[in-house]
Image (cartoon, rainbow, N blue to C red; front, side, top):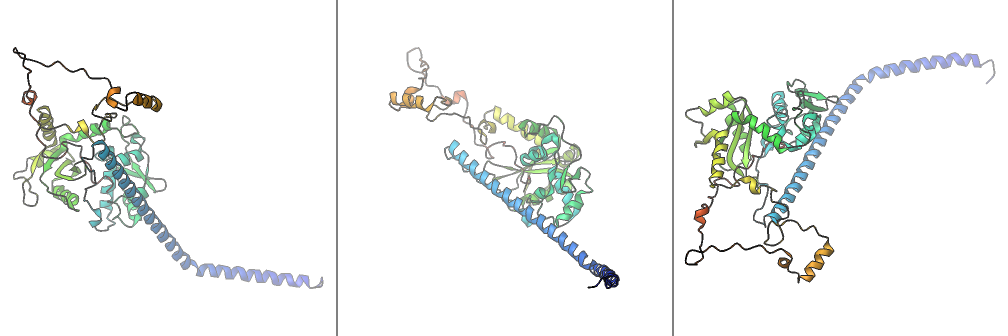
Length: 393
């Protein structure tokens, strides 16, 4: 191309560039609806991702719970010589509830999880919050809880919590925490003494009721509906035996002492499926248990509670002689010297002198003199702390 032609080509190139710019603008305008649709698809994809992540978290927590229950069952079988089989006999099935996006129901459930009536007793959630540290908990984790999965879509959970009076969203609306932390006296690790404090605070507004029969998949929900007209109710705890079998009794914590007294004063008392219930204040129930224990009519559950067997009870009949902390070589040498007879290596117990009467005849003491046999309790395992079915279920 000659030098004279170059100035002519330059204007043509600029004109072509202008045309391309105009076409690009027109194309961009035409693509606005497409971009809107793409944005909607992106939001739907994110929603699906969150729901899938919540489902995976739920499956993971369920698997971990099953493994924990299996291990505890093995430990119990070893510690109790196989007398008990600690299977999970809880039958509660929250999947029977309908899917909903009701903001009132969502707030009610999540606010319960973080309430003084549940959080101190919920070891898992307490560990996430860190007690008075008041750490935020991811909404995805909460949405994986069994009783939370019916709240769909996930965005409905976020929107519902924006207007909560007791909770606040954090981390760009992906986590939640209490507006008012637990007292500073509450440590960051779960402590039974802390649980006791909160239980004692709720004692005056709580009742005990018995007579609900065997558990069905909807029993928890049915009992909640049963007490709803007499509320507001802070918490309902189904009482369970060590194998999580429902005892047929519950502890109900009302919102106030006035509500509790009003319920106890009802005449006639409300019936469960046409059957009378045994109803009393929780304080009266606990006081009666204490008197029964002191009188020897029932065994205190704390004596050999879950995992409560003392360590080092011994391998033989010696029972409570403690753990042998000697080096294995030293123990082997001692065993060889004693002919592998553990009894010879243990100190002999001094035999108490046999008491005799004036004629020199040994006196045989009757067990009736030192106390009658304790009667079997009407509820398995005594006054074992109630297990909250709804903690993460």
